[in-house]
Length: 315
Image 1 (cartoon, helix red, strand yellow):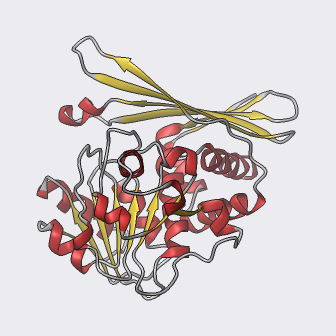
Image 2 (cartoon, helix red, strand yellow):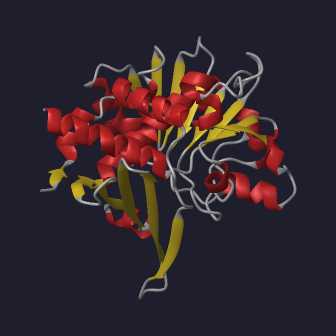
Image 3 (cartoon, one colour):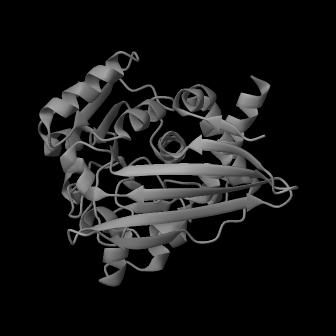
């Protein structure tokens, strides 16, 4: 009989330190097989477009998982979540279904944990000021995950709505984090040691000349070619790392400067597996500006789903 693992159970099972460690181990093991993510465009009756993403992965003989995600960007204006997802986990030996998981929570937790894992490798050890750009579903999780790998003395939250930024900051303060809302994005970027962007922006909101030497920029929000959170200078001046080359290269922050010839594919220095396996040392020195582009990958989902299943069964 399969198990339904909902939001609260996942929040408990996927604690930040445990999940970050789980991802690190899975990237080091490198046993997961995952076809390229499929992104399908769904034309809506009103002429707008939505997206359907299908992300399968498996470890032969152990586990099989598939996530189905919908992205409806117009939902934001209606006060609805823009991303919704479900995840199915199967036994890799028998093919029997083991669990159905809340894909929204699974995605938020694994996305935040993967970015925190990258920051743990790439961000300077003395990083103390964190900036979260965006106030949507991921902002709380990303802030909390990053604070699990560095001791930040300041967590700034910026959003187009000052009220929403203040609400996110207040929620983080209830978790014991030193969070506060900010209204000046440029000033916040110039002061930050680590910046994490979680928006659905289609044009650059982070500018390269705002980023100080030694900073680390974590780009999460833009996952399609026509979406973007950073400008060309940001990418051109940085040492760039990704979760997976194939997926990240199709996201606008890299796809657009690649298409324009502003950078070449070898501008990407390493992916997360190569970083975790020690095949690349990460940042070259303390003055380098590093960028981690996350587009999401099925290994992260399968690793998190297995951890949640094991915790639920043992619990």
